Structures are given as structure tokens and as C-alpha cells.
Image (cartoon, rainbow, N blue to C red; front, side, top):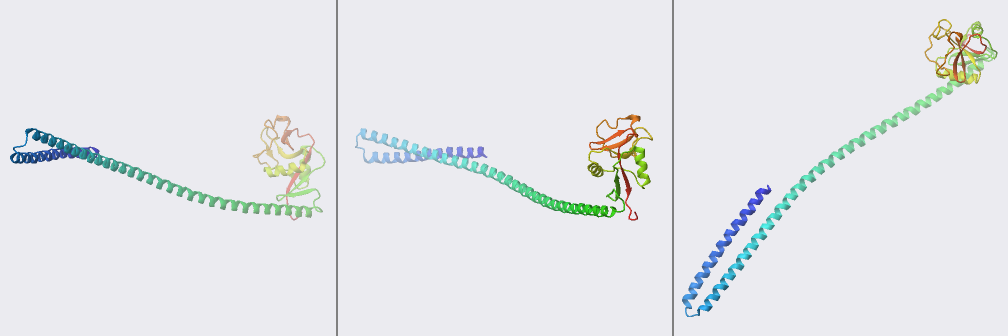
Length: 284
């Protein structure tokens, strides 16, 4: 596009120069005619006056040529300046259009992100409310369970001295010490057996009850070395051994004691306190 404009301006200059030369020739022709007329009417003027007039005419013609050239140059400069301004305006408009499109895209993305954020905040608020409701229900259930345990333990005071109600079962913590076999016999004679610990809550409950005492539980590998089973015949799945090297007694230590740090295997003939467990029944 700029090449076309340049050629157009060049053609304009050439044509303008041609026109200027034609105008100068016409002007000179007119001057010659006037000179001839003047020479016919004033033949008696001195030759020196005629030469001065001719120099003056040529000087005027040079001034006119310069003025015309100056006008052409000014016109050319104005045209070129207009073309440059037009090109710059077009480039500016293109850049401005791109920037506007990018701005619109960013605004759209920002709007989408804001909507997603609001949705997430709404979901978070709902989840928080549900969590608080569940926590409130859990606390209420825990309180009801404690109240229920207290009521049952109160009812059992005169019927089963020393037994504790917890999670639908009755537990008895001894004050004397016996071997693992004798402790289990004591429990069986009372319709119970040595305790089976199924979860951490139960482990923590009786660890807090027994404090620092070491207590026999219903776990051993007497039937098969290394295969730990509960007194009801079920295989051990969840354990709370004291250290990484427990159990470590091999064939000499086949029965398990629970104490503050966790579990440890001991010789079954050692004497410790014990815990009996049996299912709660209203007919007791």
C-alpha cells in the first residue's frame, strides 16, 4: 500500500513539474509578444533599456519557477504526512482492536473464575454446616451413651458387683493376680471370657481404666507359634504391640499382657490382673 502511495506522489510531482514548465513557456511567449509589440511601438528606445527589461523578465520567471517548485514540494510533504498518519492510525486501530479483544477475554475468564469461587464458597459453607450438625449429633449421641452407661452401671451396682457396662458388653477388672489360664477360668465360671479388643477406642478405654497395671487379655499363640488368636478362635487383625520387636518371646511367651505402652507377650504362668468380658443381658 505504501509503495502505491509513493508512486502516486511521484507521478504527481512529475506532472506538476510538466505543468509548471508549460506555464513558464506560456508566460515567456506572452512576454515575447509584449516585447515585440513594445519594440514595434518604441523602436526609438535605446538598446541598453531593452537589455535591462529582458534581464528583469528572466529574473521574474526564475522566481515564479521557484515558487511553483516550493508549492509542489509543500503539497508533496502534506500528502506524504497524511499517508503516514493514515497508516499509523490503521496500525493503532488494529492494535487497539486486539487489546480490546484480549481485555474482553480476560474479563470473561475473571467472571467465570468469580462464579466458580462463589460456587465453591457456597459448597464449603454447606459442608461446614453439615459438619457442624454431624458434630452436634455426635456430641449428643456421646452424651446419651455416657448417660446410658451411667444408668446401666447404676442398675448393675446391686446385681453384678465390680462389672462395668461399655458398648453393649459387661467388663470385670480384677484386683488380684493370677496366671493366664487361671484368669480365663475365673471369667468362664462367671459366664464370660478374657477380653477381646476389637478397636482403638476399646483399647484406650481399658488402658485408662487399668492405668499403669499390667493385665491379661484374651490373646495367645499357644496352639500354633506365631499365629495369634483370640479366645473365641478369631485371628488377630488389629494389634497394639508396645514396640516394633514385640512379640519377641518365641515359644516361651505365648500369652499377651496389655499395659500403658501397649501389648507384650509373656510366659503364661506369670501372674497379672485380668479383664473379663461378656455380653450384656437384661435377664442378669
